[in-house]
Length: 392
Image (tube, rainbow, N blue to C red; front, side, top):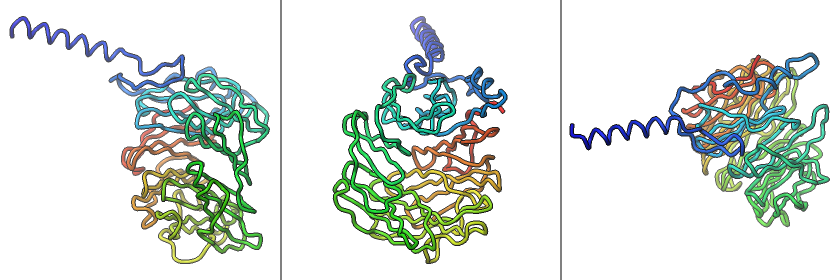
């Protein structure tokens, strides 16, 4: 080998070493950079939140646990909990502390790697505050609003929605002001794709549900689905483009929940009854007609968690079974035409999911005193690997 080639190889080896030593993210700013480290993935709690975990193990303290998870892409994601937010820039191989403090985070929603909202409470309080960050989550400020939101949905750094049990609100100035969106009478859950297109679950006083749609920002609403039921305990609706899913609750008892899941891939013109879970404790599921699946993910009698919709025909549903002490997911890869429940493999009572494509996703076991952890799948939920676990 001549001298020139030797020098080139020597320089390449130095370059590789430098790359391996580069940090995986910017902890100070809270903004997660793309990871370049090729070292072995961390385990357990990655040496993070040590002092906070010890504080929460004291007498009269609630154990540290996860409450929400959100991934912006295959690499960058955050998980929140009671007094903390952690983040990863390499899909969960390594994690860093982004925030620790007084805010007990209930929900996080980032529109990009810097700008985000959260719903949070203060210690020993029930009221939810809307807080805002512009540095990736390291620092938060309280948004001065008289409205107490149950859910938030951020479209970008200026536009977003806030929801209460019966009303919907929008902002176009980054949360400085909110205006109420007209919703149907007896609305119990609203959700908007954008400033024009939205959905509402309406309870019928005599029993049952209506699913309604607006395409003009709430000025007019049209009926898209009517479901008979002896009672109505509310529901949830998820939409992405023309794909929409309506989750309608029956009754609950003996740690079991009855519910139905209806799906549409043409903007609500046609629907399939995908899941109808009857339970001994909750009775019959809302609606009629043969479902594709007679139970949801996580049995026996599991309750649904959140849904994640990908493109126009893929959907994932989290589920948790207190009776079975398991959490899992169900999925469809062709809209409402089929449904597969994955055999549970994770211990827990409740879960939140965040998928970035049909195969890759993350699951956080939430609201658990001894099983709270973050898992990752690369095969659509068939198998999971733990990426972060809190101290037991």
